[in-house]
Length: 144
Image 1 (cartoon, rainbow, N blue to C red):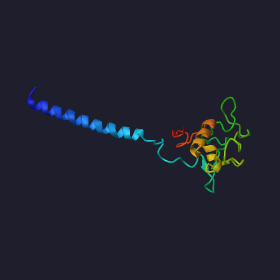
Image 2 (image 1 turned 60 degrees about the vertical axis):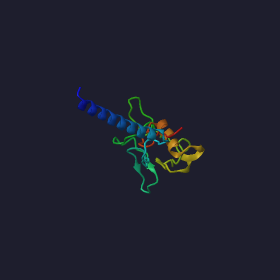
Image 3 (image 1 turned 45 degrees about the horizontal axis):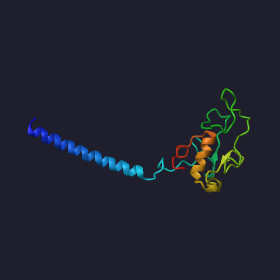
Image 4 (image 1 turned 180 degrees about the horizontal axis):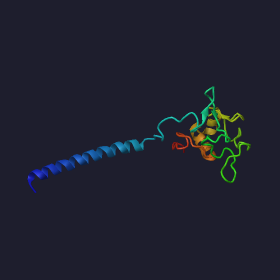
């Protein structure tokens, strides 16, 4: 090989090593932090749920409405997976903090932070218990 090609190849390899080292350092410094995912704050209510008129409570979807989404296992379903509109809701004030008995939940209620857990970690456990999807909560990884 000619000297020119050897010099060009050596410089290109050196630049490649420097760039890869830089990206490795950047990725490692971000990974070693205690950044929880997702980085954005959670939504006020679970996905597809409506906010009440006062803006403080989330309305639990009505199983009688065929357009209702993200009900999870809050209502008992029949064997074919259809929700019984006359069935009793599984939510109580004991298993859902901020539940008012009128199919509204206040997710900013102080009960969500009781017991030494953060509100988002308690809410994540609640979404897992009832199979409700809530972007920013059900996929949160900052709970111990």
